[in-house]
Every structure is written in structure tokens, then in C-alpha cells.
Length: 137
Image (cartoon, rainbow, N blue to C red; front, side, top):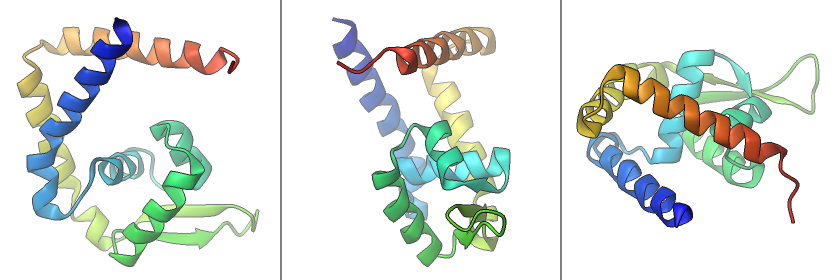
């Protein structure tokens, strides 16, 4: 059952992040948002949602809590007032070493070569992209 294997693997890998993130008061979804902003820079909520695959209903309150903690800023897009632009605040920028540490620890825990990790990640991304095109039933 592929679905079970993917589900249990996802839970296990997400759990590996906990010891790195909890001391900083971060959840895994918050970590995902910080990684996106650290890599892409200023982004709209829609862009973050597409990249993290988190839906708007989950993302909006998550971003508000993070802004309340001073990790990021939320501001209306001056070009399109319906859109909100998100950026790392000073406290969010200060977490860049934590993001890097988490990625290194997970890579070490997986016990795979860099090439194996890239191949696996590419396969998973292709599968996710393909499934995005499959009509909901």
C-alpha cells in the first residue's frame, strides 16, 4: 500500500524535525514557511501556499501567529490591495542557522548520498506535480 508507506514516512520524517524546531518554538508548517521565505524572499500568501502546498485556510492563521511573534511581516501589496506580501522580519532572519541545522540533521538521519536524495526529491516532486493535474473525484 503506497499510501500507507508515504503517510508513515511523512510522519517519521516530520518527527525528526521536532527536536531541532521545538527549542525555538517552531512547528513544522512554520518551518516550511520560513524556508520558503529564506529561499525566495518576499512572497505573496498565494506563492507560499503553492510552494508549501498548504491551503489558504491553514496558511492565513499560521502567518498571523508568526507575524505576532515577530518572525515575519505581512503587508498589503501596493499594486494589488487584495494580495498580502509576506517577508522575514529580523527575528525570522535570525533563525536562518536553525533552518540550515534542521536540513543538515535530516539529511544525515536519512543515510542517503546527496545524489540519492536529489533523485528521490525529484521523483516526489514529479509525482506531486502530476497529481496536481489529476481531476478531483
